[in-house]
Image (cartoon, helix red, strand yellow):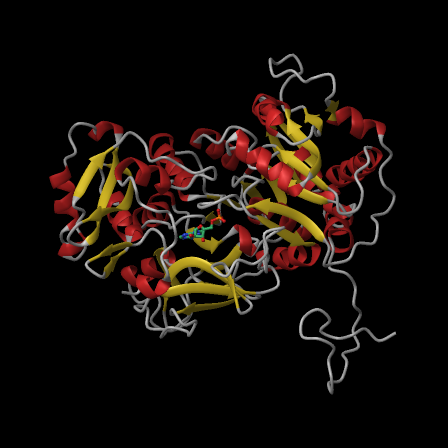
Length: 570
Ligand code: AMP
């Protein structure tokens, strides 16, 4: 029987000839799990749990996923039911990544770094039926439980020895017992490719967190994209170290993509110290590792002291916040590993753009040009349509200078939030409004200038906090720097820099020295009016600079509402 073409997109097709290819579902059970199981069963899955390293294979992981699916079904989890996970990056969490979507339920990864009230809000909002919780996180979970509207069945993942103080309650179930008692599911059920596979709540800079719901189709297509050479080029020859948490935008899609292409997967568990990460990369000869800039600057510091062998890495994938020039240059020149800069959001699954050097003539002309491309957020990956637009939604000139808001659309971009619809400040005319302000050049490379809400508006002109931070962090005595806007009676807003000196420079580094460093690098009116020295830049639950906290401290009374791009362009 003929299907209505373009169903759900533009209404049934009229007047066009139908293509005669199979319409097989783009689902985990059809396309991802069977490849990991049948073709790459021997490839390794390595997880650090407790004090040791657990070694298994994709074959074993898939069998255990089949057991887990059967066990969850026995607990009453049915099609469309949400299963929460409150867990580190481990092999058991990976089993849930496969089992829950493939059985037709929905994997809901909970951010373990949110406040208990926020976790409770998210669990209730998604209406999770069961929660898989690492034993080491039980104390945190116990603080969430009294805030829930109703009790949830907890299944404890034993990532610590049983005699550890984080004891389970009598109502909790033991993951290993459930998995051992269940017969592996013989076949995955038929699932619609547009059915929900997973969900993840945004880290929520304003208001309550918002639920992004990934479909099987979006997950499969995103996984294919991660394998493209102009994205991460993930293949069966890779050993991937997924440092980015599995609760942060599906660990940037790496677990599902690794299963699809047959890459070995290394999961670091609880210890995200630079020494522990370097040790894993070194011992497992990882070819690709992914984390936010704070992870990589910690790794750089550690490397300078201990010189671990990181030569197996093709790339250190870095995203979530802008990569600074100093980090990008130091990785390449000192360690000999290029940073691959990627941009995306929870709403974009998350890969939106990746920065590989262009092949176009002139791009490799000199070190400064190469560095500028390496530090840019790159070009949209195939499958993502990206525009940088002005306040009327019209594309800005591709001159690398004019600023506008990034808008994206594509098969792995959210079209609305779970039970919160499509607010017009986030979704417009079939596009996702990212809230990121950027320029775009003639080759399509974007350079993020700021979040709309972080730009500093001084005398009607705009100052990029990202650029100031990059320059400050290039100073040899600076560990971290965050720039915020503070109200100013004359100029409306002025930049204030919060600087963390390196330990050896504490008490020695002066504001004047930093201004001296900035003077040749930025326009005079960009120079911060004040520089305060702090012990640490507060971080969000996913390791980004939390400027909300700094604004509350140094610019009380500021509203957190995003600025419209019309104003952002001055
Ligand atoms: P999240 O949904 O928590 O992953 O946050 C997404 C936001 O992080 C984006 O809208 C950007 O503001 C920021 N972001 C992600 N990647 C980058 C990057 N490579 N450079 C600058 N900002 C980034």
